[in-house]
Length: 149
Image (cartoon, rainbow, N blue to C red; front, side):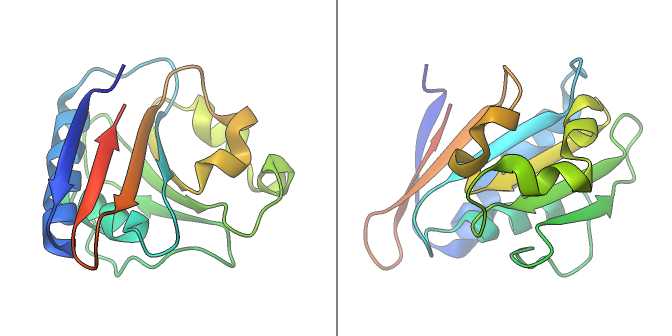
C-alpha cells in the first residue's frame, strides 16, 4: 500500500516533497479526525527538514525546530478548514503515556488539526486507524529515499 517512493537529493528537495504533500492535504476533504503524518527514519534522516517544508507550504513563518524537550509544539494555520499544525517529537519517549497530559488524544480527535509526529513508531497506540506514514532512509550523505504510505 505504498503511495509513492521519492528520491531527495538535498534538504531543499526534501522540503519541496513535503510542500507538495502539504498542499495536497490542505485541499483534501476533512476526515473525522486530524490528519496525522507519522514520520520515521534514523537520526539525521531528514524528519525535521520534512516538517519545515511542510509547515512553510501551509504558511507557517515561525522558525521550526524539533520539539525534543517540550514534546509538542502548536502552530496556528491561516486556512479555512485547518486551524492548527502540531509538531510532536517522540524521540525521548518510551511510549505514548507522556503525551497524554499534553492532550494528544484530543488533538488527534479534532479534524481541524494536522499532526506531524517524529519517531511515531514509539507512540503507535495513539495513532488513528488512518494515518500517512513517511519513512525517510539515508542513501548517502545527501540522498534520501522517502516512502509515503
